[in-house]
Image 1: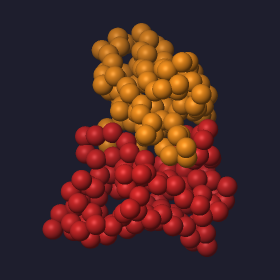
Image 2 (image 1 turned 90 degrees about the vertical axis):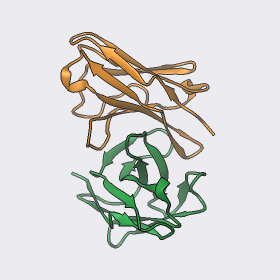
Image 3 (image 1 turned 90 degrees about the horizontal axis):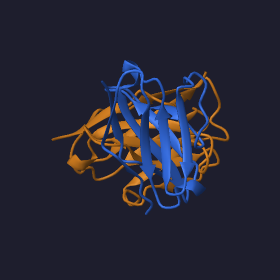
Image 4 (image 1 turned 180 degrees about the vertical axis):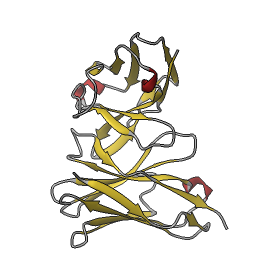
Length: 106
Length: 119
């Protein structure tokens, strides 16, 4: 089965840039989606199809996908960006989530 | 604006069957994929399965023998049944929508229901 690997944690200084990676075999041929989950809340889609933003998601969130790694970039990080982030793909009509990354804003 | 509202018991006894229903309001169930996702306490997200508006389904292989996802188009609802539950099935269960099963993420989620497995 397809697997997605994320670093458990990432720290970023307030106002700086955070990069969250999602590793998977030939992930570049798949569409990658990213979710933000704050404590006690349902996940929210922040990036879909590698780099598209749903309505209402700030431009500070961007995504890319190349080779074996997809990346979610949070620019000008704010305290409100502190959350868990999950990547997700579809593999043969099966949903697959990454292991999740906890982002801490210092 | 489409919203999802989940209903079902928050407590299930070991070896019994978990049943949850998700009601779609503010839009049609047609041409979308309706998914179930769960998250054990303190852990990550696990996709359980989906049902398409035509009735076709896809399930997580690790749960396939125990799950059924069904659709009631007249009520704009879809449901999850999980048999023979154990403590490992305790989790927050979410229902969520996706436009496709290849190129789209889960754009609408409900608030989630915590399911406890205990006698």
